[in-house]
Length: 551
Image (cartoon, rainbow, N blue to C red; front, side, top):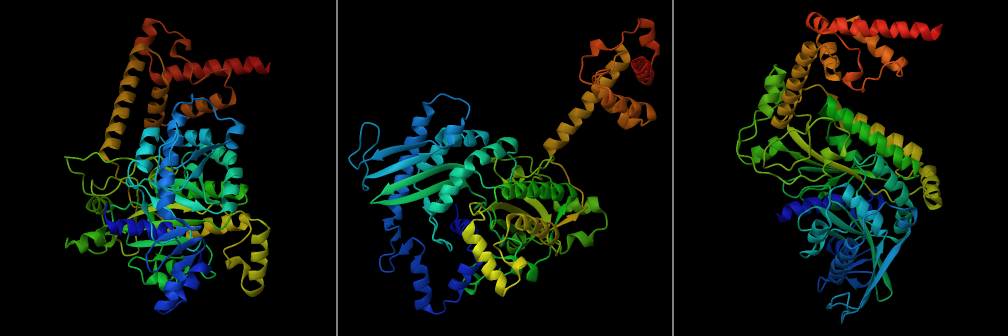
């Protein structure tokens, strides 16, 4: 995995709050910049040795303890029988002592003695199973090889580790955020159970490392951004405008994390096809409703954009500029944008928490080839370049408590209250949705070309309907698929009335009942009658039954 790819993930996953980023950006000169980067929150860096500590505990020891603790927790959980999640499971905390000499259940290790807590292990096992994450795969990703520590801590000074396979992020959280996550778990379980397709963070584990009188709380989440391709643009968007501009220090990076005002100044809305736009907005609206119900605000939409055409131009490939305007035939223009996949296809690993899998989409994603990661959202920028978008909602552990209310009131005295990031959850959710729908994304009408697998599925479905219709006419019976085929090919008033009668009087006629329950026909009738005659006979029977009931 390339180092530049990890830097892409690092810079976006650790996007700073606007106010704190501005403080870092205002530190000019080598001495001030080093001082700002030396101590951020609980994170400290020894400028002489380069050692990084968190709460005065070396981060290398934290990483090793995390791997030992997770391996022990998952291993012991495998022996537990499968069962439903109970309410008390969200409050249960498992604690294991790890002395350096080891015990009969824990291995020896070179670190200081520590305790490792696992919060709600049964509940998080269900979360992992919901996204098809097997215990052995989870252990292999987090415990098989050393984790990679990300060097940019962000404004809060959190420590970030990324798994070697680029699937998971391990992040330290503050005490107040950990307490809120514990209270949030039952509602989070209910939301995931009802709606697994969500842009909200997927939490796969919640742990606490205790050593030398220090508590280091960590959560394991899905990694939003791929590191196998270059992200040309990265944004941290909240829908607010007060101090929502990347700092000068941030802009010195190779690929800075830009913010709301930067997007409004330099970018135009990204064009999405109708189905993708509607699915994305539906998912964002649903997620905002969930966050609003838990009184959560100050969350962000993290978005990484890979410019496909720009990447090809960087490789020396000639790409026509403004492809949308250069060809008046939309279908031909779209065919130029999407080349058919190569016959020899490499099977790529598909994760269920990709961007496409997280939105309420009924269609399959466009296959751009084996060199691109699966699950990105396809769109067009203002120049007509093809772009691949990866996004998700993060920082959902900030609730609108008393301190946040005071912060909003104080800032509202000096600035426009509606432009401040910290706001009432109802207002914040509406502003967030409107900003994404009107400023970030645009509903376009360019056609979508399905992948070859989708075409085969549609062709198979058409053949099944045709065979079903032929069998219906031959045997004189009516099947549900025949109803669908006839109503779409020959619209008339009879199917409409029949469908209306289904909804008004389900007891009279059930669509899903077996064919054998329909009125039987003689052999002579079956050879002469048509599908429409059968429907009319059934309709007459329904009207007769209805008239008897009214009498």
